[in-house]
Amino acid sequence: MRITLQTLTTRLTATPNVAGLVAIGSTAHHRHAHSDIDFLVILYGNPDRLRSIYTFVTGTFAEFFFCNVATLRRLLNSRSLCANEWDGTLYSWIRAGTVLLDRTGHLARLKAARPLPLLVPTPEARAAWTRINYMRVENERYFRSQLRGYHGALTLQLGVAVSDLVTAYFQLRGLPWRGEREALLTLRHRSPALLSALGQYSQASTLPRRMAAYRRAFSIVVTKRYPRWARELIVPMVSPEGYSPRLRRYWRQLTA
Image (tube, rainbow, N blue to C red; front, side, top):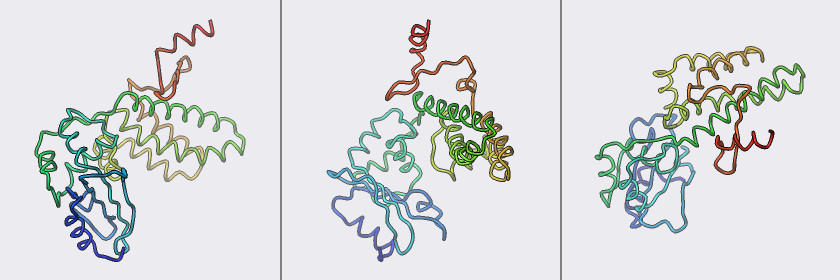
C-alpha cells in the first residue's frame, strides 16, 4: 500500500463498520526502524469471518487482525480465558494495546476491569508434553544409530525439537505464549538455565554437542507433573482429544 500509516488509520477510524481500532505490539508503544505494524480492527459486522490481512504499508510489513463487537461482549462476560486461543490472544492485545477508536465503550471497559485469568488447558499442556517426549525418544534413537542417514535427519529434526521445547516450557507451566520476544524476557527472569542451554545449542558446531545441549534443555523444560517418559510408561492417544490416561487399562486388557 502506498498510503501512509497515518492516512490508513484515519480512513479506518472514519469507516462506519469499524467500531474500534487498537494499536498492538510495538505499534502501541515503542515502534522503531525494525518494527512491523500491528493493529486490531473491531467490526460491527464481519459476515466473511475475516481474521487477518497481511500487507505492506510504505514498505513496512503490516498485520491487521479483525474481530467483531460480539467478541468484545463475550470477553466482557468471561470469567477466565484459554491463554493461547483466539479470545485469550485478543484479550492480551487489548489490555496491552493503545486504543485509537472505541465507539461502543467495550474496549475501555476491558482495559479498566480486573485482569482475567489466562489459563492453559490441561489437554494443551498434555499435547505439548507428549510431543516433546515423543521427539526426545526419536532423537535419542537417531543419535544412537551412528548411521549417516539417521544423523542427517537428526540434524534437521533437532531444530524443530528445540523450538518445541521453548513453547512447551510455557505450556507445561500454564504461561501464555505471546511470541519470541516476550518469551525471551520471561526466560531471562524465570529460567536463565534454559536460556543458557539454548545458547549452547545455537553455538554448538558438532552433533554430539548439539545433542548434549538439547538434553540439558529438555531436562529443564519437563516438570514433576509432566516428566520425562519412563520406559514403563503407557501413553494412550485418541482423536482428536490426544492423551487419554483412562485407556491404559484398556491396553492392559488387550495385552493380558
